[in-house]
Image (tube, rainbow over all chains, first blue to last red; front, top):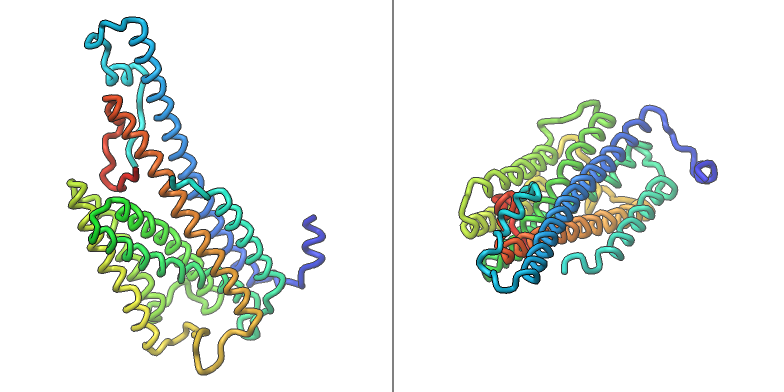
Length: 91
Length: 240
């Protein structure tokens, strides 16, 4: 495939100029990849936080179903989150 | 909400970038003066135009925020400036590479175009510490909007001043009496400009979608009476 593309391409003067042009385009691609990686880590953090919140909500509904009259004795969400080892941070 | 239409937009961006890069290397003729080095033009100039327009767009969103008090406009303004700064980094690096290849120096301090872009870039770099320095979220958003409007107004003024200045080495290729770009180069340039503009829009939407998701999780935590692990973000506006 690459051979076909290169065969169809005009003769590119990839000497001294080529490395600068390649460098400029590589810089752009690298910046884009770094940005995508940062976004991926942000999304992973959001996913983790969402999972923790879902676990807490499920735990709460189970406890509520098991002891419907207890109400105020239900352990706090903060305590539950702490026991789940909640971490992360704002951006 | 912000993720809506993101998939087709991303596909269109990738397709247009691929078409643009194909035109750059397989269609646009070699420049008679600079030769192959001139290929950097199709990357560097559209990035610079999109970055500068992005700063102005950030200022326009800030005006909407100041008029309505709606924090969504503040988030749009913040994200527009954020993505434009990233584009600005790419402009400075690709410009330096082009300068080294073409003029033999990484940077030329007596060139108005280069120095003015650096001034605009550094001005916008102060946006983050300025925003971060204010604790109260409402005051933070209002002050950041005033900054964005003022700096946004500075961008076209700066551009006009540079345009009027006598350039030493930086070429002028648009709207000049001594001739502009030939048709094939102009077409390639316009496709690249559209591709980078679309990339900017896509990245802004991605950023807003991520901030929106993060804001929704924090709201959910608050609704469940659960403290956010890192508390409220001090620097980035929340999007609901």
